[in-house]
Length: 384
Ligand SMILES: NC(=O)C1=CN([C@@H]2O[C@H](COP(=O)(O)OP(=O)(O)OC[C@H]3O[C@@H](n4cnc5c(N)ncnc54)[C@H](O)[C@@H]3O)[C@@H](O)[C@H]2O)C=CC1
Ligand SMILES: O=C(O)C(=O)[C@H](O)COP(=O)(O)O
Image (cartoon, rainbow, N blue to C red; front, side, top):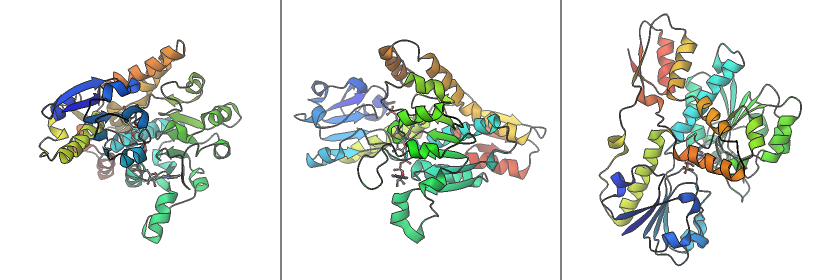
């Protein structure tokens, strides 16, 4: 059996080595010729999986080790009897930690003594948005949820949902919808000129969903107008050919890596391994946990003298500080369009190992119960 797989999927040999031959490919440039004799195709978000790629091939199963599925023509796969599996939720916690780290930096930039004074509007309340809401709720933030598809489906039985405009009135607006182009709740350019005109200087807009959810031409114009909001972008229209002028105008710019914790990536591979095993009728014996190495930083200790807010931001940023990714992306914006696109993909391919808060044990000596609760709410393990 031949498995054609994106070379950027971690642990291919560990999970799939005993199932067949693995052919590693560059997912961005994958051609029909490279998949023609494959039985199984494993991709990431950068491969467009459609009729053009697969017609006439032997492929019977496609797996994407990602949450998003906007790069896959699901209807064509179904019509052609090709089984498909994604990895819902695999890196949701990584994105949640990305947003929390951005929030801690933003509170500092605003000079806020207590970051939970910020109200947060979450647009798209699924695995990522829902996980973020739960975390923020435990941390004492005011959270507004906007998810019309869920509101329609769940009615009175669901949580309280607000309109898009109500969510846009929060101090922080963070986008976690999939990219969809059809239907009553299509998200393509969901945030356009009208929505951007509602955001002002005291507000922060974060997009770590998909670039095309925001109209970037309208965003560029809004960022040049008076009273512009602060903007953080992890995802961009037309990746990897992103707009260097937009990079210049946003506060933090990262190369689509919000979901790139090692845990998130390995869980993505694990979920697709499980799906392939089910498809082939093989037992599921391997687990992501057995392949996660010891983290480089495993313990942090705070004494009773530690300032609570500072202790939290230190621990959070020890795990992940988006300013490093921002600096790398800005450096990569030199050169012509081809060089910039190649650099964008290189930053993603050579991404340094990043571990989630759960990999770090926090020792709190003589600390208050409330600080312990806060660290737990963030997902850290406590050693008291
Ligand atoms: N930057 C990154 O590295 C990553 C980005 N993502 C992106 O985040 C997206 C969301 O991920 P999950 O939460 O796991 O997906 P999910 O499918 O669990 O949740 C998405 C939610 O968005 C809602 N939604 C759909 N249309 C909407 C609209 N017009 N307005 C408001 N809400 C709407 C859905 O009802 C659903 O509850 C993914 O589809 C992917 O595109 C995911 C992982 C990593
Ligand atoms: O899971 C998703 O959805 C994502 O956006 C991934 O984090 C994107 O990673 P790549 O598949 O583009 O490496």
